[in-house]
Image (cartoon, rainbow over all chains, first blue to last red; front, side, top):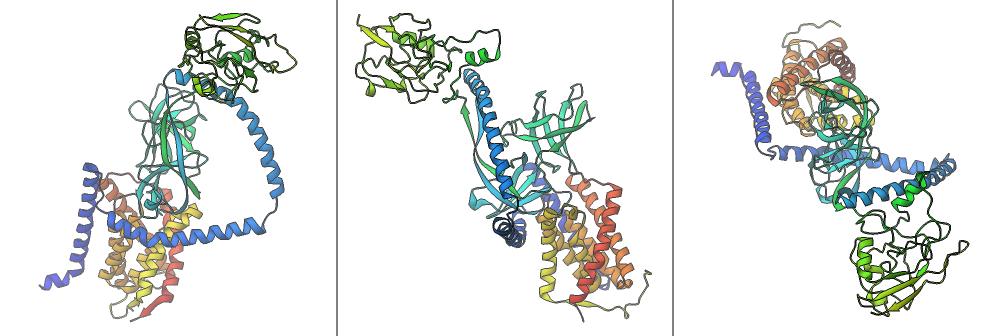
Amino acid sequence: MDVLGRYRNLIVLVGVLFAQILGLAVQVNVKRTTDSEPTRLIRVWAVGMVTPFEKVLVWTQTSTSNLWHSYFYLRGVRAENRNLKAQIERMSLEQVRMSQDADQARRLQALLSFKEQFISQTMAAQVIGSSGSEQSRSIFIDKGDKNGIKTDMAVITADGVVGKVLRVYRSTAEVLLINDQTSGVGAILNKTRLQGILRGTPAGEVVLEKVMSDETVPPGEQVLTSGGDGIFPKGLLVGTVTKISPGSELFLNIHVRPAADLSKLEEVLVVTKIDERQAEPDQTGAARAVDILAERLPGVPSKPETAVAGVVPGTGAFPPNTSNALPIAGAPKPATGTSKPTTAVSPQGLASGTVPGARKTITSPSSAATRASGGPVSPSVNSSTSVKSSGTASGTPANVSPSNTKTAIPAPATLKVIPKPANPSSEPKTPPTVEERPN
Amino acid sequence: MAITYTSGEQVEVYRFSIPATLLIPLASVFLQAWLPLRFPFFSIFDLPLLVTIGFATARRNPLAGLVTGGLIGILQDALTSQPIGLYGIAKTVVGFGASSLGIKLDVENVGARFLLTIFFFAIHEFIRFMIARGLVGSHIALSWPHELLSAMANAILGVFVFMLLDRVKQRT
């Protein structure tokens, strides 16, 4: 008894340490075997004690900053506004150029039944705190369970990937950054298309692993998400390769500088919904692949302006509802025109009229249209009234529905299309004549 | 600068009010979590460790020291992505050790506090490293220059933190 009294402090110390070590071992074991978390309650209490103060402090700081910058400190706003307008103009031009490439890519993706992932919903969140430890790189955001945040949701900024939601509390959530040593992101190199796993190091760096050492990776190459981890949608910018060194077991250690500044995060976006859809060709683009190629390849002669009835002179663009000479077999929807000429026949009716001034007799509009557009065909043809295109794609019979058709021609009908001579100086305002010859 | 031996009778024992006992550790954990967001260099400091040492040396009660250290450590653990216990175990030992040493040594002068902080910072990091490696299976980057810099920085900050704690401690 005397001994116990004498070594009381030491015995208590050993007891407390033993209890904590036991608790730690249980946590590690449970984490390995199951995905549950036995320390949830302690974490909820701790986060509940600390984050309210953080929220108040961040709110105060943000409000003060907003008040100052929005009402008092407006120096340079005009110049900034001017610069932004100029930037918008530059980007608009760039967008036009890129949309053509995107249209072409979508058509090809549609042909391959390619499924694309895209971010359909995000939620902005403010960063209110961090773990405060150099060994644990995580942050806390001011959105939680009540805002619809769930674990394993991707967290990004406009610059690049930040991390994923690790734990969710009622009004806050913990985000594990990509430079934490326990994180892992499926990644792909932009040019070489080499795939690997992006991991954080104990020192807080980001390294791309599992790339074979016989591969050549140039410094400066961009690293994107590969989508293979099921958390981050494919194609998000992660960072840039800075250094390559030999790793273990025939793999390279590719050091990556994260695109997002992980040490100065203030606001982030939580990806709350990722959708997957079949790629569809753009319905608003005017150009066809063959037109784009004609523009780019000097050897390909430009398309005659009066090639077909309904071609918009001078633009080289086909009007809507003319699905003739589709460049890609089976492409579901043709492009639309930039103007709105009137046509008297359905796209199916004009499907094969490619010779200037030719009188084309179509014995079966249905079959011709099927060949041309690759889509379902309606036998209905608007022969008595002009159908103004709404500017949408028309490979499907949507634009020529029975509701806007006064005279429906049965399938075996024969159509004779007599296009008017094209006038290069003006848009064709009168529709080509259509003669009906029932069999 | 010298650390002088004192007998048990010569040592003064202090206590802290309940609000100070509750709010100061909480504030230290809060600041540790918040300041690195605004000032990334602040992550080299360990404010809860300094508070643990400060409380333990002032109270000079090993049991109070280990309980305070353990609770502050667990609170700090709960905010990280790591298992709970890494900081908890390390700060339990530091709290116990600082209290025990506080009985034997005069830790009222600046030099003693500076050296004491460096010593307990090293103990803290060593325990954390060993537990992380041996029990959790995670790796902690152990860079000696960085650890030395961190220890010095914490020791300097510790001098000021102890001065602040001197203002709120009460003689028993």
